[in-house]
Image (cartoon, rainbow, N blue to C red; front, side, top):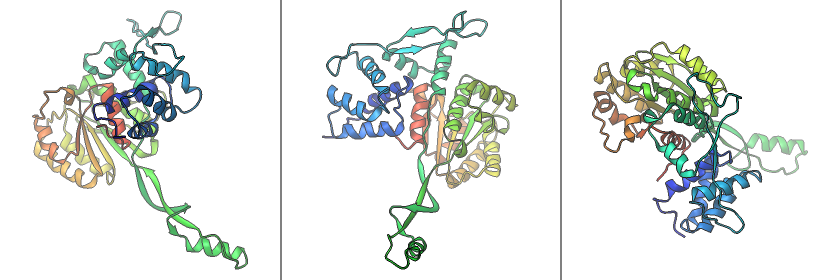
Length: 367
């Protein structure tokens, strides 16, 4: 069978994300397997999609009831198999109160039934246009995000079942056997997660998105603490990796707010990228710059430092919240100076955009 049509791939990936938000173990690797399975089946057939997802996206028996509920809701309540009633997904939402407390007066959260289409609308809505309660819901989903990493081959060789012959281990085993023929031993390079260095713009023009960007950065650090470095950028460069290592998002955000001295100021990206190249080793890393490109400094300096960064980094990804607008054009001086050295310019205005960015960092590209 042909691979799934390009128009269906976002729908199928969105279904996997809905499962992940509902607590099903549909991680990035399982999502790849799901899409691979549908290359051999017919993605337009309900039964094929149901069984391909059930066999690849579920991590265990406990996931099956939630999978059935999500499938029924996501695909308009159509029952793919006999005996499964039409149901809706239940999403826990916290209601915002003037005092800032969450939930009802007795401490229990309000549970509101929401269809998959409503969840999808929230995922794609611009964060800057959300209410406080909707933004809290997005932040809760970001806290559950698991950002896998693209793997790279290390220079270090480790014992393996294949690869190059390990002469020393083979000879040592033969000696232990008194010179009798021994099984051949091999070694091969091991794989490590590729390092990510993220710059999060906290200047005044990014005020509506800065909190969500930092929560996404928290998810990155939590997923791969040893392979992630995060800095805030504004009028100065501030390393905030240690603060983001708190497992609790609220504690992490509180520590970050105390560590960043230049909230809602200007942006001097050229000077800060120069400082980054002095402080951190970006060689071989994926560098993520989350900014709208409003440069207060010299655009020429920004261009020169971006050229240096592009030569050192494995890939440079620029996340601009305005890229989510269909009519957006990179016309600011900072964006024009940086764009020739950027490998990917992606949106960063919604939960769906952050999920897509996480997929890209894990090596999964949507069609």
